[in-house]
Length: 111
Image (tube, rainbow, N blue to C red; front, top):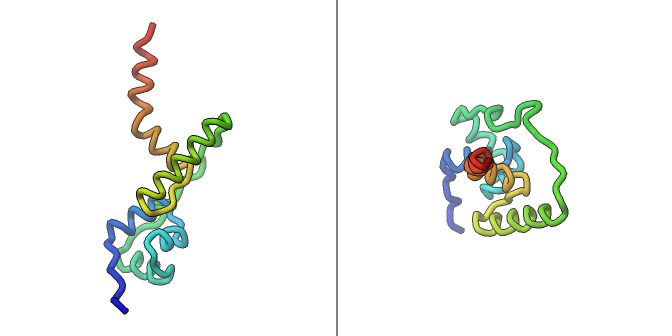
């Protein structure tokens, strides 16, 4: 049986970000034991609070059924491409980070 691949600190940080600092979810994404992930986090002095949502940072939205289905499908497609779980909320957050400012600028430019 081949030895397990060593997971880079950068991949650990990415998994923690994607999972909002949830160790169990990050360990699944990284395909490693949760206890091993805890040990790596401690050795690397990674502050988990950096990855956890701050109180009041989540916004609850109601979306049309059609939009909800689009988000669900996008999360499924991205999870397949990235080979780790992607939630509809993560899809929406990523979309807002990439597209919100140009969208808002175009709305402000219209008379």
